[in-house]
Amino acid sequence: MTTPDEVGVELERVVRRWQQLPLDRALAASGGLRALVQELADEVSAAQGLERAEVPDLGPAVLADQLRVMVYDYRQVGLDEDALATRLTALRRSLP
Image (cartoon, rainbow, N blue to C red; front, side, top):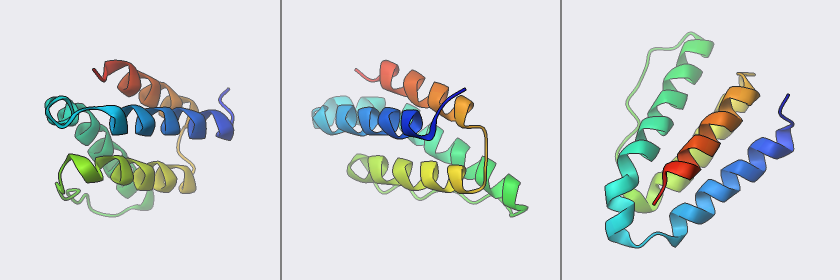
């Protein structure tokens, strides 16, 4: 079972890694991060009984902040933290 601290630590690892990427590599890898942000948004919407909405594409500089917001929302509605930690770890490992 994942502790809340583990999710926070993994989130910060993803964010730090993302911030270290040169722009060309961030652009190339942005699809995976953007997909996770949208998946989390969709799951939060479903948990709240709301219609799905597309997360705006504001570019790679904002993606880490969008991820932070969606992780916060995901946790606030009480979704599976183990799954969240696993997904964040997979995302971090996929980054160049």
